[in-house]
Image (cartoon, rainbow, N blue to C red; front, side, top):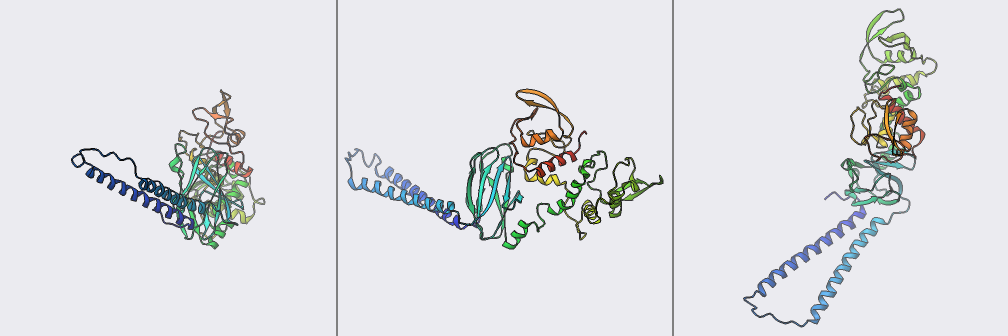
Length: 414
């Protein structure tokens, strides 16, 4: 049995053990009675069947006693159910959204996460909703399991008295990747939780997003990709330490390694050290980009933070949104297909066949198509796939633009 970290779970465990105890007791009594009757009323001992007309006290006992037992078990179950459903006043509200096939948790300040963070000894009111089909929010350590039904808002509450990480599952079969709906409840000390909530903790890729958001702002991903493929400019992933054959303004060529000086020069004055094989099309950012912002971009392309320490793998800012919104549960980024949705790689600018109003139509996967496919997924359904994606018409513009930019960064036709 999972460890018990929720006060109301004690009532659930008690009810379970009482019901289990009575069940075992009844099983033993019935089994003993059955064996005794087989022995006592064997045909050898009772060759003539007795005609029993009735027994008043026997009928009273087997009517009253089961009634008392059933009422006792009902009260035990009801008291534990009431404890689980009585949400304390002032509980912290967290929106929980289930979708095929991931979880999304949204806090009052708008911060979202794929994992549920909670401060220790603090009640949380979890407002449950489903974007597509029926899911079931299940935290074994809390003894909490509640269905998420499309079009119906429900809620449960939890409170942990122990710091640690605990499993969260979907307990309702919801499709092909139902088993992937696994995440964590992370219970933190109050001060650590507040730091995470305020964004000062280095979680959710915030550190990476700080630098790469500047690259998004200045349009770096309109020409550079992040998956190693060529676009109208060299790819940026894994650039740190990579050898480059460059052409100097006087036409001379030399090989250098991509260090902080080279990358910064390539941003501020790209024509000064032009990569061989590429045209001098990138405008200089000298005067438009501050020295501080340029250093931030350089550090992140080198895979280091401001102190020079390495951080986790470089990501496109839109990848963060794709993870949080659950896009990567069905869409891939490497050109393969899960059979449920097209791959993002090479999608932008490609020509695809879609079904609309029971008719086939050829479309170009431009920005407008991608935008409409996100917000109104049932409008166009790609040939070879079923209409299983729910509409995401509630996403803000920043998220949608980030997703479009991420898809564009994975290559395609202009």
